[in-house]
Figure 1 (cartoon, rainbow, N blue to C red):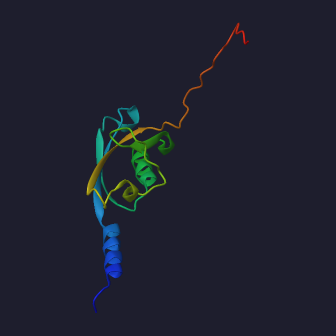
Figure 2 (cartoon, rainbow, N blue to C red):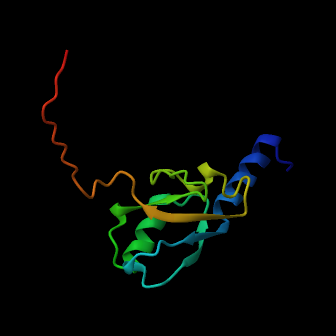
Figure 3 (tube, helix red, strand yellow):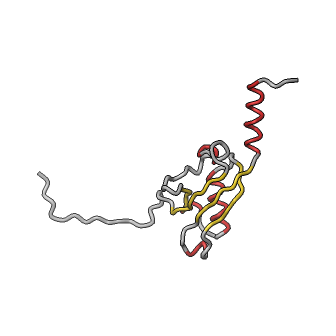
Amino acid sequence: MKKTDEQYAQAKEQAAKSESYFVTILLPTVPAFQGVTQQRRKVKATTLVGEVVTTICKRHKANPEDFSLATLDDFILSKKEFFEFYGLGKKFDQMTFKLVSNPNQDRCVVLLSVENVNIY
């Protein structure tokens, strides 16, 4: 029985989803990572970005909420997206990202004191 073009495309897509790809994560120079500079992980294209962040952080006893993955050009990846959303398994067989401090974390409070302001 010959497959239709649609069936062939679906089978190819299913095969691609079951394949694993290498992702290299460059780690920040913070005490939690104890001098480890990178990790290479094998992931499926359908793995959530947040799962990898959580796995790396838990291994090093760091809080996953404090970190995000970013491209080498500092584009922050959504933790709720799959790696395939960013092209893994479709455009790229392997990718490199860096683990960065979460830009959404407000670690300090800045107090602004304004004195003698005249508003006209």
